[in-house]
Length: 413
Image 1 (tube, rainbow, N blue to C red):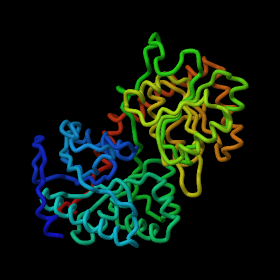
Image 2 (image 1 turned 120 degrees about the horizontal axis):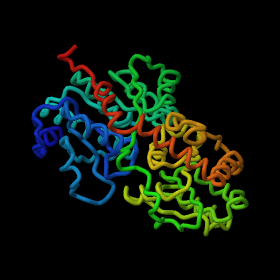
Image 3 (image 1 turned 180 degrees about the horizontal axis):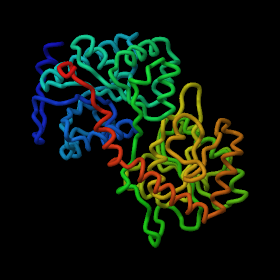
Image 4 (image 1 turned 180 degrees about the vertical axis):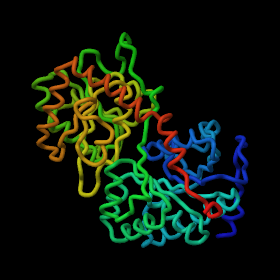
């Protein structure tokens, strides 16, 4: 098995980069076109770090395709590998075999391309592969931490022990929010000197306000539109807003709640809508491409992410909050996890308590307040655009990343 992996051919287009040397091997299962904030974050940041060549070893898309045209225009070589893993622990034979297979492949690639370090997208599984590589080859690694990943790991003794090993042996950890950084320090006892705070960002050239005179085409002109974008999972809080529509309709009879995304909560959310008789007030858009997504942001009146804590599962940051604000929209978000880093309360929107999905009084009041005051919505939206442009545009973050995403190789120490 090892020999077959070591001898596997490596096909990389010539992009003006020495194919036998790379500053870092970036390992990430999630990568565009697969939807996911972590993959989008890595894709955008490394595309702007061209001074140090990277080898992007990423997962195959969950869309059934064999060719990825967008890979050809990426400034670094991209290798699409089978990085799927049903269980991220090591207590099952299938997982052990998957870790062995992926680690052997990464070892072969790192040797061939003389990688100076490994950059892992998450603690499990990418970080554990990097940890195994360091134990056997001495190759240093850094790991991106998103908040929910290390929180959920606490629910399992096995995952907790594996995650602890990854965190303890990493040369550097990249926290996506102050919330995540505090988790690393308080819950995992990681020294602050090994943690770098680096937020995800947004392309402000693409996500931008609409021209005022362009009429709506995605939503009816006559309705006030609330929008939530994200995977349909419990912590996102879609159910709280659906329950809240009963009260919101008393003040805003024509309100429409648009939901973009898909996920395991979809059947449950449909049942809630039907039980409350809200079929004419909730629209499920499903998964949407970036063109429709931008259009949805531009045409909504208010963006809402009513996220909450579900056990140890909570929002690590909230890139969708940045995208909506970049389009000039005020936002309302749950005061849970790392969302406080993505919003300026009172200036670009509101942070509220969304913990009880069936009693969303605070959420309802905030929504009714803004939907009833168009002038305030415009004020918050203008500040939101300025806030994101100044602090979260990918170009701004890339300057920080050029310093943060670097660890000394063995020969540099």
